[in-house]
Image (cartoon, rainbow, N blue to C red; front, side, top):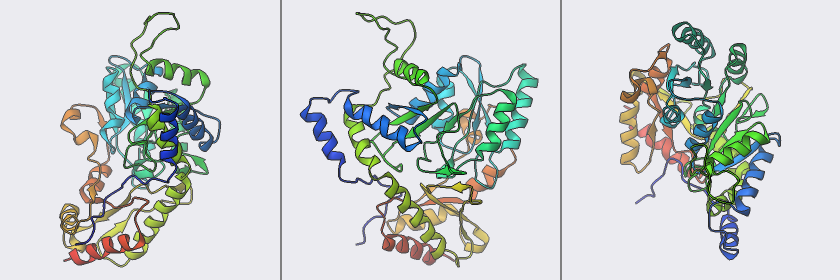
Length: 378
């Protein structure tokens, strides 16, 4: 029986256990410690050395703390990308705010700058003020059109909190994703480019912002010789053990990104002559995706089945795949929220599928996935 091919498994580099052993040997098994400091430093250096990074328990926590620093509170609106995972919008609700959803453009599948401007102007007309923040997402590692998005944001004075959870290693016009917004979030969940088992990070522009993030992430304890709290805080800091995994992963991050790109290129070549299956490519040289997940669009008329039927056919052959994110404006929990759309994300969701893309996949694994797709074609 053939081995199961998973969508995106964690891929260790070898030195992770050394850093974990060091934490045990020195009894730094509690939150914070030398591994956390070193991991934050390595991330900041990777992003170019001009940002300050705070390691946290999850990428969701990073978005939450970024929104808190941007002053989002009860009743405040925040513009969110509809076509993404729920964690991009849920922290707005944690703050008592209201997500306002914007559809994607077809080139990158990310937030449409024209619809963003329309949403900002319409919300001002309806509420008397602009939303408090904008959260674009680099979906599946593909950079959003950040120059256009940031130009709209600056025009109306609305700060950007960049969701780069899936985009560590991606670049837009030669600049690392995660360095465009006032804040940015990263994720190190088990299926991401690198992992800390679970975890995330908040990328800040200034040392003062990073210090505030650490303050809120450690229960907002004031600098007193006793426990004293003037603000509501959270238990969001990353453990020294998890950060040890992250330190080891940083040593192989470039190799992981390079391998995901190789896998994507291999899929594109092997599927090029399969009618009805189109591999999602970057729209141009400005967009250097890490290709966290390789995505395809399935045309049921040309291929003979829809994307969910293909998912089931792959599953029957022990190959894990996944349908694309269901847009937030279609989710029951957000059905009543404002939405500015063009129908793009709905069409992509109806046809899209994520293929196995983990950096530990072999060329033979990719070939087997493609052969399974070819065999499923009707």
